[in-house]
Image (cartoon, rainbow, N blue to C red; front, side, top):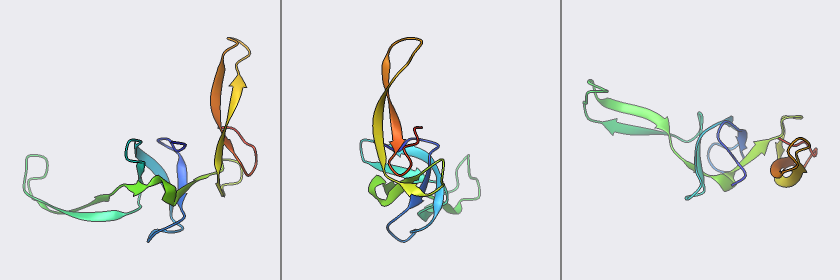
Length: 107
């Protein structure tokens, strides 16, 4: 998956189209992510030790990764993501970095 935790993304499809937020959690096996402030659901909870009052709790639900695009760190616009092999000069090892297709910026 090309989207990682703490990335800034914009929703491009669905009810929350146009909203931006930080990725809080990633579920790569299901291709879903939780974005801060997006896809809010209401859960009815019984009284418990953690929540003695009980009641209705609002929280974010996962959305499919195909419905979001990563924000380019340079222009703050949605961009497609590619990858690039970069050689580390000190160790000589190659590692893969993500690449914003619009500007060519690596992150």
